[in-house]
Length: 345
Image 1 (spheres, rainbow, N blue to C red):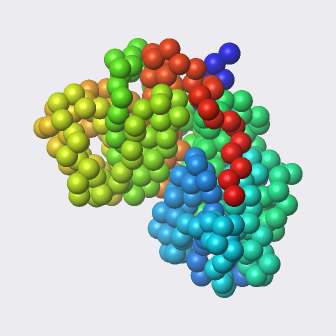
Image 2 (image 1 turned 135 degrees about the vertical axis):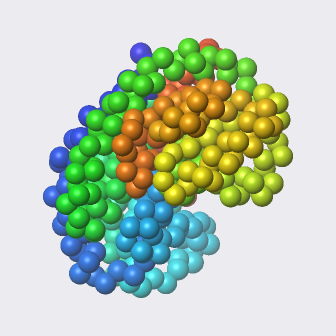
Image 3 (image 1 turned 60 degrees about the vertical axis):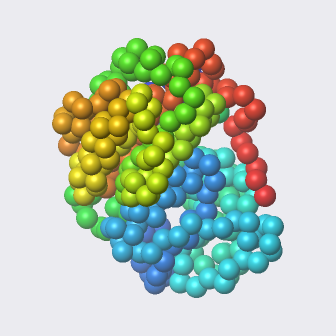
């Protein structure tokens, strides 16, 4: 059974269910945040969930003007020196809710009297029990080791929290449209296995995004690593141009997330430079011009608001990782040496 394919295609239903079942609770959480005088946000996560935390860092910074930082769990577990906190919302993000180092961040914050929130697919997990508030991801069991639908649900939970804090009815309408946009993106990439079969022999690649879509580039790189055992580093376009671009040469595969909005001009410039160097560009985009100049175009649905772009944009990246894995004769459901839950301390 190809669980990865199945779970990628479950995502529209997961997102619709999460919004329907948890919007009321998210509004309650937003009310508590506003009443608490929160001045900044601390985010604790590992692995794929780290990329959802980075989305939160960008989104809450942009839409709520809240400074947001990633926690350093080793300070809690290895160095036994948890930071002193005040006026902070501490968010733990974990599919399983079982990573002791992420739980320790929440435990310490709550002991210091700070507001705590868990985003997890396991509402009875240690993480959920440690936090004051919980947003259950409503993704159902995820049998593939490489996370897909739980990651999308984490993104949706973050977006719901931002929308609830904004109290803008138009943003709720934007959220309600996302499951259909994800479904349309799946349809537009129905033949992806044939398009990416030529990548079966690659041994390395890079993925590049900017701003909100840096999260997509990071997760794309992780999926290519997990499912294909290749070197796949991810960069912000700004960092990429500061040195790593030197590795791009004739035929080198580069994954680019080139979407409409404030980052479009920067990413188009990176795409043009990669094309000039002869790269094999794999472009995730909602923009016809960017897709037309790609070696392998991976189209998105149109009409997606920039603040929600990471939700549909991750879908072609997930399909890319799986498609290359199938072309290489690997099992995308069960990458070698990995288990579904990794409990780091």
